[in-house]
Image 1 (cartoon, one colour):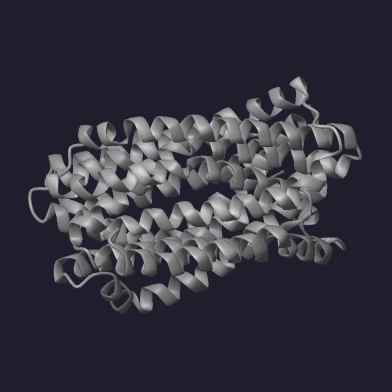
Image 2: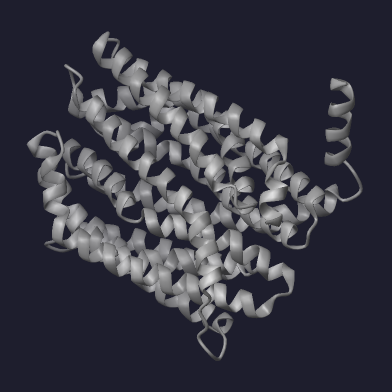
Length: 452
C-alpha cells in the first residue's frame, strides 16, 4: 500500500511536463533571487556602516530593524493575499475581477501604510523606551526607528505594486525597480552617514529615500493594470483579507518572537552587548541564504497560484516541489561557501574580537539547518499561493512559541548554557516546522481550498 502511494507521487512528479515546469519556475525564481540579493546587499551595507559607529549602533540597528518589520507586517500580509488572489485571477481569464483585485490591493496597502507611518512617528521613542536593553543601545535605536517610520507608507506601496507585477508575469519590471532601489540605498548609506552631519541616522534616511523612489517607479509601472475606471470589489477585498490575516498574524508572532529572543540574549550574564551585536551580524550574514530561500518562497506563490488559476492541480503540485528542489540546491551551495569563509566574512562587519568570535559560532551552528529551512520555506510559499495561509501560520506559531522561545530561555538562561544552546534551540524549531509543512503540502488538501 505504501509503495503504491509512493509510486503515485513519483508519477505525479516526473512526466513530460517536468521540463516545462522547471522553465516556468525558473523564469519567476531567478529575478526574485536577484531581488533578494539586492535586499541582502542593502542589509549588509547597513550593518557595515552601523559597525563604524560602534557595537552599540550595530546592536541598535538590529533591534530597530526587527521593530521596523513589526510596523510593516500588514503590508507583508497584504502582499501574500494579493499575490494569491491576483495570480489565480490573472490566468483565469476573469479580467474585471483581476482589475478590481489590483485596485483594491493598492488602496488597502497605501491606506495601511499611511496609518502605520503615523503610528511609528508618534510612538517610536516610547516603543524603544519600553525594551529591556542597555541605554547605550537605546540611544541609537530610537532615531533609527523614528526615521524608518516615515518610509512605511512607501514600503507598503512598493510591496503591493511588486506583488501585483510578479503575480501578472511582469517580474522583470519588479527586478529593474528593485535594482534601482538597491544601488540608490547602498550609495546613500555611505554618502549620508559619512559625508553629512546625519552620521548613523544616514542609514535610515537612505532607506526612506530609496523606498520613496522605488514606490513611485513601481506605481507608474502598475498604472496600466488599474484600468480606465478605478474599480473596487467587496468580494475581492474580503478574499484578500481572508488570505492575508493569517500571514499577518504569522509575521506578528515572528517579529514579537525575534524581539523576545533579543531580550533573552540581553539577559545573558556575560558579554550580552557583544552577543547581541553578533546575533545581528549573524542574521545579516545568514540572510545571504534566507533571502534566496524567501525568493523561491515568493516565486512558488506565483507558480502554484497561476497553475491553480488554470485548474491544473497536478502541475501545481509538481511545480511547487520543483521550485523547492531548485531553491534548496542553490541554498546548499551558498551555505557551504559561507561556512568555509565564516571568519573572514564576520571580520568585515566588526573590529571587536568577541563580536567576531560569537558571530562565527552562530554561523557554524545556524547554517547547519539552512537547507532544511529552505525546503520548508519554499513549500510554504506554495501553500500560500493556494490560499492555505492558516495552515502555514499554525505550524509556524507552534514551532516558534512552543519550541524555540521556551527552549532558548530554559537552556540559555535558566540552565546557564549560554548563547550556543539558544542557537541549537532555533535549529530544532526549524526542523519541526519543516516536517509539518512538508506533511501538509503532500496531503494536498489545499487543492480543495484553492477551488473554493
